[in-house]
Length: 517
Image (cartoon, rainbow, N blue to C red; front, side, top):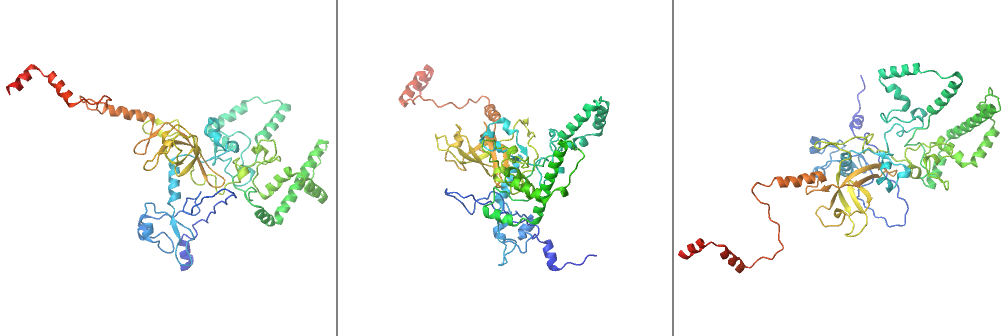
């Protein structure tokens, strides 16, 4: 029987004190000479504090699971009872400093309604060209792929150089055979056994070359590293990091240099015909290690990847003049482990690349409309025009979609994008295309124009539905009732003209009737 807990231990165990994650600091602002506009009440790029919810019954009593109830007057007057603690779970004044967390919670709900997955943005496509290039849209990789979603540099967790399967994108190429059904496995083995073997001389060379080509592992593509990003920290922070380097990292550097020297000596011995001669790290002298260190210091392109691998630092952007900035050019030593190309110049993200917004692994799915069936494109969403262009100008506009500002869109001849005084603001129908998280934590959501319109109920209406509505209004017209006449441009006749024309149309019988009466 376990010992009985003390009142203090029981209070801590049942409290949310240990369930709340630490506060996430906002990214530092880059120095600039331009005017900066900031607001204390504006929604931040990402939530810094955890959002806390409670049940309906507990909400009526003001019970949120804290040390003391929250004021009911400030928590019951909202339709979204979600709070966050700003200064911690308690203060010296014995109050809980809280505020509403509905801004980020509602943004999350709106974004999940788009049914779009988070993707990586390659460095060569981190511009406006991918909005119009149909081939560029297919080059985006999901953040949950097994080849990109890694946090360590273990070779066992990396994918091989064999091409990934389009049927099972989340299965490693070397594990595809194990995932096959037993019937297909037996058939594959029979085919391999029935195949005529190659010659003994050529077979060994072919199998050796095929094994080296297919099973040569590469480093896993990662989004988290143990060391800091050199493009994010300042000079003072870098000096502080150097002072924290222990003797363990220096020993690893010494072993790495000795291992490289052993491999180099073994290679030279085999080239000279001494195939049986082997070397170990004990055969390397201190003088050879110092000489190699002196050589590497003069070759930063070779020494940099070694330091980055030992200290587990992310790669930085290549600065070789006249060469393309590609992942292959980051290190000439052959190290490229970044899951996204844009991180080479901005650093890895602060959180997971998905940021918890969406857990959809791929965007290769079809939206099934209950009335029109499977759709060839994404659903259209109603967006609000936040910053319209002046009437008659060709300036760009800013549109708010699902709680995020879409990047400036190209000018179009669309009256909804022009400034017009309208209650609630102008709205436009857009189709979301790409969503990714910037290395600073900001969400980038791109959309494209459509031929859909927004009706009086703020609902997106397609051109086919508009045609059905107009046809339905014609069918709803009662039989025998003529449609309302159109307004004519002829002037209205005078009263004397109407009386004269009326008497001219009367028959003689009618005249006799009026005369007798």
